[in-house]
Image 1 (cartoon, each protein chain N blue to C red):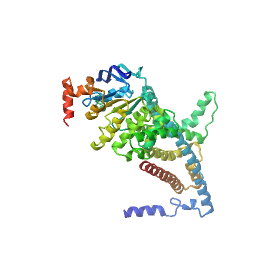
Image 2 (image 1 turned 120 degrees about the vertical axis):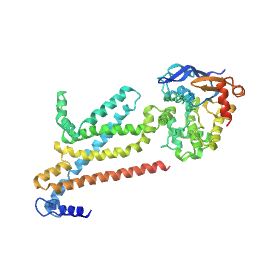
Image 3 (image 1 turned 120 degrees about the horizontal axis):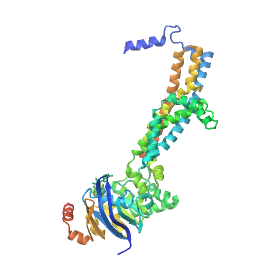
Image 4 (image 1 turned 180 degrees about the vertical axis):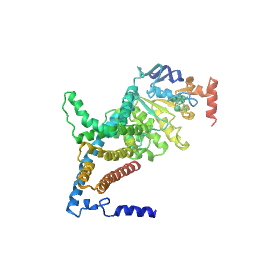
Length: 252
Length: 245
Ligand SMILES: Nc1ncnc2c1ncn2[C@@H]1O[C@H](COP(=O)(O)OP(=O)(O)OP(=O)(O)O)[C@@H](O)[C@H]1O
Ligand SMILES: [Mg+2]
């Protein structure tokens, strides 16, 4: 343990050359450092916006994709399977390029002119890509609710949709929520890819500052900490929500 | 005989290659109480579940109040006509007892919350647990839960009530409280089809006994004859086994 610790300390303190640590670049007590920090953190809002909108779309699309997967009809289940298997197979970065550079051409060839900016390009890609996973989470959660529940709902006259809305989903949500929260964390991290199509979010800002300041180590360290803070906030929020729902379940 | 509420004619059903029901025919008059018994796996649950469309059938005719219910009829479409009480209660655990009772009347029958709650309280009183209205099903004993389940199906005011072994999942000391409620309903003149091995209950309320074995109806008759002198060997064996303990 001790030699390892020593080694880490050595690396952190460095030997004061340009090859090692130079925290001045993001030292908020100096005017330049403070400007740099403000520049880096200013990407936070875009990262949050992209992630939240993509997550909301993903949990909506995911539910719409999961429902046909629960049908008795072979054809509906096939729709679900094809979507999930196909979307799940596409790596995020190629999909991002396809959406950002390719989709406008598809639109133009159909005679409509819908420009796709980096912001919406990133959101569409993240939402579609993630929806294959949320769809599977919904399907597993819904299928984990005993068959007797939907049978009982039917015998008191509820349609399949009403049974889903009032009986199945409220119970399934407790099992669905934790894995959905995981997916949200995943989206926040994957939103970093938006930097490659020019979106001014956290990672893009860091990259731009590295180019001018030549201090990748310090800047990327701060970048990682920025994501860490975001993810920890989400985790705390989810745990709070779960506790509330748990209490709701036990009490009256 | 009274007008038939339920009529089955030559109903057969398969699970894959396995024939669960073999040309089952029966007639249940309005206000009549029918008790179905038979060994495990004989197809009792399947018959009951075919009547309210939780299962489909492959051959034969099923009629509810003279209207044929085919394989396109959904169980919810029969919600006003047929109520069902399950062995495992199948209460909605995330809802209060009161909300378990009001959900169907509000969403399927379009009652206002006020009317649905008034109706729910009336039926909870009927099954003798109005004081539990605010609790969750998980906080009740098995016997209380099954009584809530009975009240839940009553709240839809169906013309026929189906029971599939309503006391089999209960501890012995709770069976009586559920049977008492069911006897009470029977005395009201409700049409009931009850799958049960509670022969004391059957003697008391049944107009007609049905004994099933291996997917077919082996013997039927009024309880007096049925218990005193079962004709078939299979029914004799079954009754001697079940009555001996
Ligand atoms: N979904 C199913 N798939 C395949 N076989 C089934 C299915 N449901 C029931 N069966 C079979 O059909 C037969 C009749 O089942 P059913 O549940 O109607 O019997 P039962 O008389 O109600 O028995 P028990 O007293 O155990 O409840 C059994 O052999 C059972 O294994
Ligand atoms: Mg059964």
